[in-house]
Length: 245
Length: 305
Image 1 (cartoon, each protein chain N blue to C red):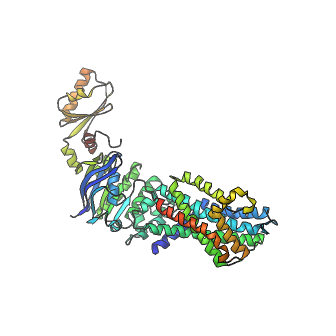
Image 2 (cartoon, each protein chain N blue to C red):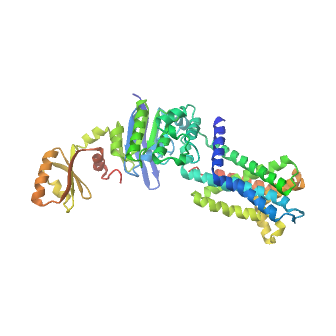
Image 3 (cartoon, one colour):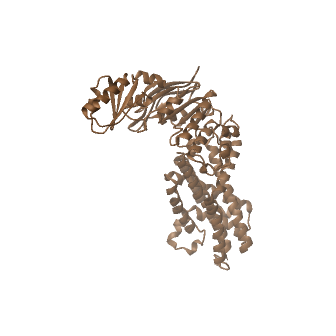
């Protein structure tokens, strides 16, 4: 337990000391909400003010960047440097290392979500209501899903230089087709099946229904099969493919 | 004295390459043991199998009486390892990373004491990424000693360091040994092996081809002393081999090493022959045989090739 606390402290320090980390997981989403919030202020999408639509979308974007892109780059970088090799010579257990990593990713998601909500509400008068517990629950499922996907991605590349572009190649379609910035009905019909298959879309829809429409669990349940499918599928793949060296 | 490490019949195969071929040796408690060999000889593979980092295909390894493959976790508590290319987190301070590693073990030394031993006390608030090569190497050794291990494994601890930094590392290693620690190291440097190691094992092509004290290795090869001649006008090896008193000649480019028991007499002969045969000798020197000669003799290669 003491080692886990130590590992969490270390991971937190390492995160906070990396300017890139802070930029991509916190500053960039803040810039996006300020930009999109200003550009689309006063507009109405799918019958709701644009900011109410955008806020959950940018929360999901920040979540994907923190859990998938930024974490995958961190892991590949540490693997490339031989950190895990060195650690495997100490009694530190690998599950401690993993739990520490995932825990800190979760903290980052909570921080970026609260920051974005604070800006959305105070600057753009976004309406955030609904069941907070349910919102947090959906957010947690989303965080775990993208952490798992990030782990899978680390197994597909050799070094940090190839991790970054691969992460971007996944992030961009997930953002644009996954309903982060505009509703599904604004996209051509032939793309809908693709969008429907992405975890981002269902995470976005579920969060939006809870936060904007005050939906309960029974109403967002249809979003779960695809989301949980990705979570379980990626977890199995991660366990099978993940390489420490 | 009891046995610290016992390796029997250790074998590791990577596809076509037999990285370690039936390696057996014993290391006593409190000994500084060196594994020498050219790159790719199997030193690192052998070391990493003893450390538990790689699984052997065949053979057994006992560390302080424990089977490494069965009691890996217990072994980890009592060994300290410096890998050839250790790198820890960059954005972490020296004292933080030592604290962190200390926390992994059931028993660990106070961070301040460890930093003092490797002369990094004044760098304790520096980020790891800001350290020089020599400082990073000393940090790697500090991390290897943080659990006050019985046995330290140091894989090329001084490669890439300048002479001053190398001497610092030697002092640290000798200090550890004085406190009763068993040390297993690999090196490219003969003078390092001669200065530090009580016994050395010479590895080539995955096998231990000689194992003894440095002095005995030199004695056994009958290389009492060597006359080194650099000849630039294409003198043949045979020419030197035919000289009286020359036991053996090893050639390394234009440099001929003439092994002899009567260095002074041979030198006189060479100077006389130089005038008679118009030999173009650039340099002639006499020296006692070293491990380097033994190595060249046994493997046909220079250590740093």
